[in-house]
Length: 117
Image (cartoon, rainbow, N blue to C red; front, side, top):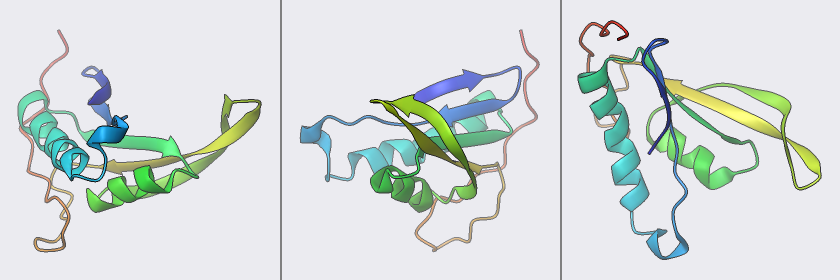
């Protein structure tokens, strides 16, 4: 799903929270892999982001499978359950040049961003 979509800034955030029954069937990979392509071709953002807790290995692995570049870790970013947790940030841009056949999505070249309405 699009966790956030800011057309004025040209940024969208992609994320997921699958139900346990929907895990390990490839559904999340398929859907999340289609979202950046759809965003870049129809809405024209200049980047798609994926943010997750740094200790969430499955979420981090998903972003990597999608070909998103690791941009950094924000230390102690978010409080949860009595402790502060690090947040990992990854992103992809249209035409980012992920090699075809690498097992990752090859981002399509986006049209010019649409003006904010």
